[in-house]
Image 1 (cartoon, protein in one colour):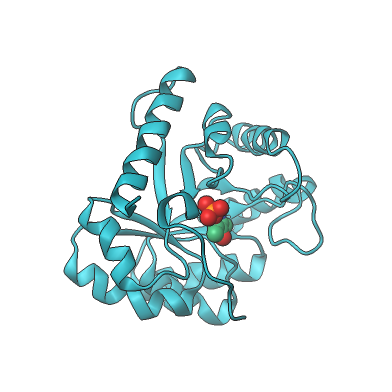
Image 2 (cartoon, helix red, strand yellow; image 1 turned 90 degrees about the vertical axis):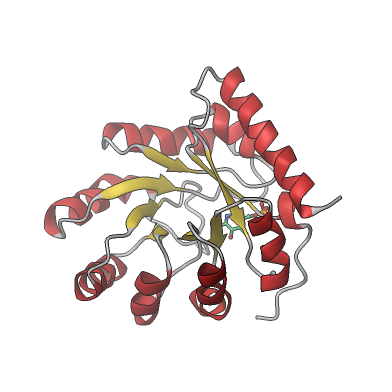
Length: 224
Ligand SMILES: *Cc1c(COP(=O)(O)O)cnc(C)c1O
């Protein structure tokens, strides 16, 4: 099946889930995760009308998206992978939304760069809901303090929270936890749900779902 029909299928499933969950039509935004795919593959999605995309590496995005943005109007690019401070400058220049704020140092660098470049990005904080040692994100216990730090001390407006549930667990309690942390901090957007679990995420209140392989097919083994 083609990328355009995969996209239509996923969008259709999202619309059905919104309805089932009693949520407004269009309340969930599909982020098409195009990491590892070349520009010619991504163009198939752009030609089918998709405009919201996710990439997990600054360097990789830098090699593909400036040209694609020139060719297609209205692209909205989301950084969904871990960020290092030395990439903050490029990240702020390239992306519209960052989902992975998870350390004070990163939050500070992003703030400095947004000021320097006069760019206002939408920022999400990543929460490590499973408290997995190898995974990025703020621990659930530290989430309220960190959100407060970003908002009060840095004056950043935090649009949303993001999580990646542990690979081998039922994602539902993780989605619920993210929603709860967002609610008590008065944060509106929830970035949760991937190819395998976006329908469940929508039931639990996701406003952004990050879907890669269900649209573009399986990714080749990563080189790094
Ligand atoms: C790769 C990736 C996705 C998409 O994963 P699929 O299972 O291919 O849908 C979503 N979120 C993040 C953070 C990712 O790195």
